[in-house]
View 1: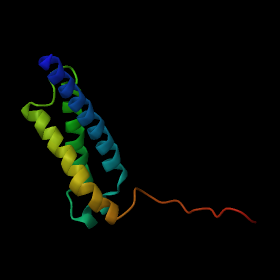
View 2 (view 1 turned 120 degrees about the horizontal axis):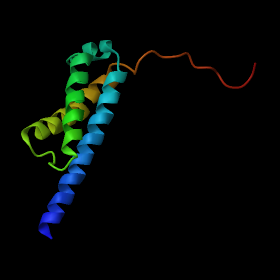
View 3 (view 1 turned 60 degrees about the horizontal axis):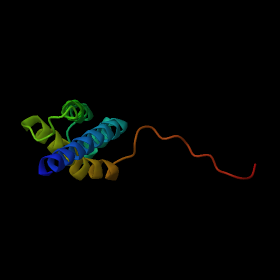
View 4 (view 1 turned 90 degrees about the vertical axis):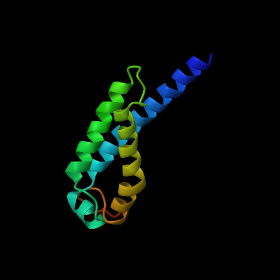
Length: 108
């Protein structure tokens, strides 16, 4: 009973880290490099590489090993660091990619 509960918790944690790493990777690549520089954070390329590696590690851990190995813990730390520290700063210093002019609704 306890063993199956532990396996369920590890599986839920593994899926959560995988979803978070994919979401973080996509989100990180949507910000221009100038936003990273303005926020005083590492480059967009470095965060893309880190979150990409976290995505691969978390995907491989879905097979049953769980994310509690050394690489899994590193993946958790990278994902949490992005969402807690980097993403809020990026939101302060710029939007995501080039902006299109808004069309006004109504009227000619």
